[in-house]
Image (cartoon, rainbow over all chains, first blue to last red):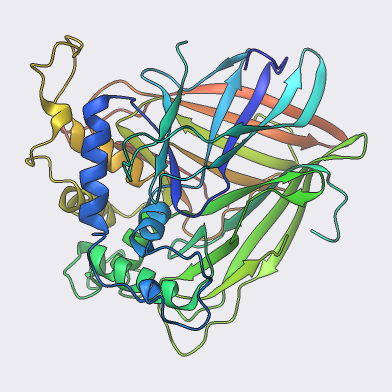
Length: 150
Length: 150
Length: 150
């Protein structure tokens, strides 16, 4: 946000993957672990899923066993929108955009798109790519975050 | 997307119903069934819900027994936003926009709104209606999808 | 929406809190209770969560026991987008924007941002703040709603 002159508008953050999720919440170490436990309770990786039948003839050769990851992803969100108000992100207290890696570690791409009006001049579609955050220690649910101290 | 000149912007897809859901994920036949099983585990249709008490005086005459459908809908999403980057949908690999019918089959309407800048010229609010996808075989969780092969 | 001249565009509604949620659904008294029961089944407040260990040295002095509230919040959504089509909200039948208080009662702030084109003239980033709805009777999951009769 330092590099854009948008005064009022929005930041769209969009994950280009089907087994990640974005969510806006508090970036708290132990809450991350609570989220991990919660999602594994909702969609246990050890359950049987039809999508995990890799003997099916249509399955691509690099298909992982990840039905639970898809289910976790649809429960959360592929994208988040953050309002920009008077040049600042208007998302309140304890804001962090969390990127959840649900089937990694893998290299991931998140698209960030800023739109709105700069001073007196409408601008739309300023786009950029943000490299996926590094994933540590083989955690399945946990990848990184984008923090903002307003 | 063939009929718009938007180069950078967004496509908002919004379901005009409270017992459907939109989600961006992989359009894979057996994953659809996994999603169906998953949602029925989260909000079992056979459970007792207050919203299903159709003897209540305020209930409209055409009200179906569908509390579980509302609960599934709020767990997923009413809308999805897809970024447009250099004239293409920037949503990555295995992209499909899935429309989940949670209380059908019924005729459904999904609103598609494209906004952004065409070549050198800002455009906002190009709107269109997309007829709801046909529902087959009385499936409750499954309606159709919008695919894009980039 | 009475006070804006936007003809085609969008309304972004964004909660500035991490233990509330927004969702578009039917504003029906008994469905609210069904949602409350549903969310408490997904993330039982009485479960043990690491985030609730308030003896940790990093915990701020005003931190409540609310891990379940965070989990409910990420299951639903921090924001909703509603399309504006020809000067009206294009969100269909039984539309209400529900604000769920998951850790109250507290004073809450919801940001409403309208963008789009007025008659012949693009406008972006018309912003406003809406005071959080009052919370009654100490309900944890239930705060208020914004209704629209189209």
